[in-house]
Length: 391
Length: 113
Image 1 (tube, chains in turn orange, brown):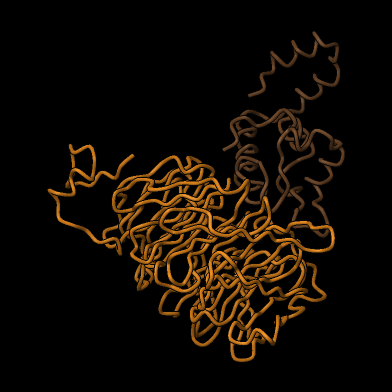
Image 2: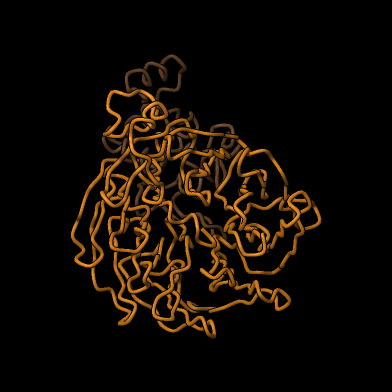
């Protein structure tokens, strides 16, 4: 289905209509995943509205998106191994491949020419030409002596044409240099920590951090100084306490920085951890309404917004980074799955799966600015991500 | 959706009257059944995939579960599994609801999306 713009009413194909309507940029656009129906909505953020949708993208549970640096193409990573290159200007699929049996996300290289996908089945990373989606490199995540393959999580891009990712089953972090795309050079870091469940990189591309499910703490790799190896930070932040069962894994979507501190979800606790990035020690713990899933900073770093695992997934809390306290609690409805700030942070978009809505909140007044219908919405990804390291 | 009349007829024809009638008695009300299937797809689906073909957790398709004992499945769902991310779902599901859910999983949740 093509995008139908108001200016194009009655014109079947947007391509045909492009000649009669003013050209538009893509920097104000975004994508909302409609996970149950295998389609995405194309949205515009200045005037919150839905431009149209693109279907035929397969199983979009846990789908994520990266953008080409010209912000014209959204690369959609589906659970079923589907990698789709969607033209968000024309509202149609440009290219699509099913590259694995079970996948979890991907990244775009520093130069914008490579797309890497992290796969559960078969475990590893596959690399594709960003223009054609032709396969370029295959990096099987083998570990141990029996040649087993690990599920791969937390795949990000890093400066130096590198991709960094974690091996869930192996407890390893790998750095793959694709300066020569056909001959990736891999550096493995073993004993990174038990069951890394996700990873992220600081906005400057220097520090890669993996969250650990199997132990308290985080794994840190300084990409400016790989010789130092992986360091365990904040070990035993909950030692002696009985962690709560996890009804949804937390995510490290993007490193949340504000007021010289980093904010990360605690695993199995109703807390957001505050880390001092100068020495990577715990600076504080902030009690919150439930087990955090996403902990994301407004682009100016003044606020951190948090959503939660079931049964508290009807709630969003806002932390003030100066007082390090929850200053506002929102109850958008059941199934809050994701949040995305507009590029300079005046609004936050919140997907409310069970209510079939995306709510747009003013981040100063917390007033509801708009509410857009969407079918079981999950991830929200704005094209401003195109030019950020690690997104 | 499992139909009570059909299930009883099936039970009678197969000579399995007692256990299946018991299962029918235990089956949650239709509205609750929809809630459980929704929980299966959305919450279990976070790890096992919306189509239950697996993710961080193993697949829950009939083929994948065929050789697992019902007891093990029941214990895993209700109590979780130590050393893995599998959480105990006892706060959200009763024993009878879990029994019904396992029966549905073994037959295949065709409309799993």
